[in-house]
Image 1 (cartoon, helix red, strand yellow):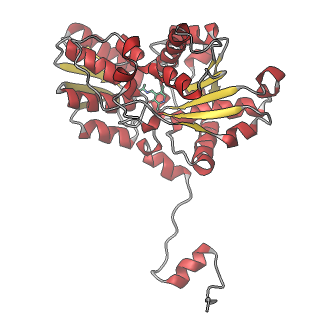
Image 2 (image 1 turned 135 degrees about the horizontal axis):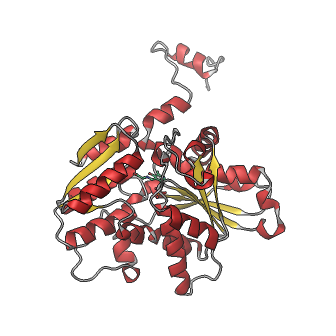
Image 3 (image 1 turned 60 degrees about the vertical axis):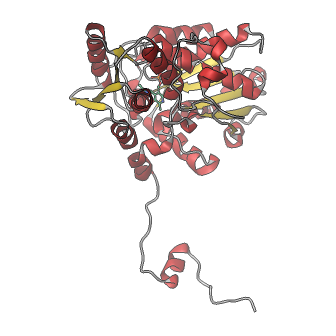
Length: 363
Ligand code: F0G
């Protein structure tokens, strides 16, 4: 099908009018991939799917929200936008701003942004400012600047971002022909879990499905303010995208959890890397570490026998893979087997390949 982007596809559900200049890079319509190896871990007949948001134009789910935020900013006559970011928001804001002809300022925690994301923001011509501080501090700074100047904030506290991102839920229902029973998702600033829950609620009203999913959010163990119940001053995790200690949509995330009878749990960096490698090596999917947090949460529950309960054993689960693995090449290289080197001759290569008897030829 011809993909014209999420605004064209779900216009009825979005606050756009004839006066809205639609700025799109043809985001959305991402694959929903069956992951039998994950289903197998549960020892049940359940089905598991991966929503591959890394297939969006800038390689993350942020594009769904950014097409809306930038289109509405353009409609309002804004000349410049600003965001704080752990990387993906800045990459997306920079790309959509380039397309819209807007100036884009991005404020990043210095040294804590995956290389690919930084490259994207720079390549799309954003004005990049790295602060000696973390994401939470960067967010406070951009809030103040946007309030006092004529610059539009495009973090997920901008409601248009949530509106765009809710289309992820619509798409999952359209692709499955039903709603999932469990929706696994990484939680950082908590905009995306908020958006998906809003999306499911709105789409249910259209009568396409009857049962709401349980929202299963996952934070990194040392960046888990919602799980712990208090802000984390110095959040840590190698999943830099979700290294956030005081999420902006904290309350909304708790609402999604409670209304859906779901949960927000935490996974260690070790569990995140195990899921990251499993996806790469068994399912053929290269996502970034933060994305693997949703799958790590799934694997943790599977190992605990959570899905063995009769009522869950034929459930349908969707895990959101929020961003592409190429965003963070340093992490991928650090976690994988290194290439071997040898002289440029067949014998030496075969030796490394572990093939000894290669002299036999077919006649
Ligand atoms: N996964 C990835 C790959 C992300 O980039 C983010 C957030 C999340 C998950 C968490 O989503 O914040 O809506 O709960 N990245 C933001 C950024 C903070 O600046 O790119 P959330």
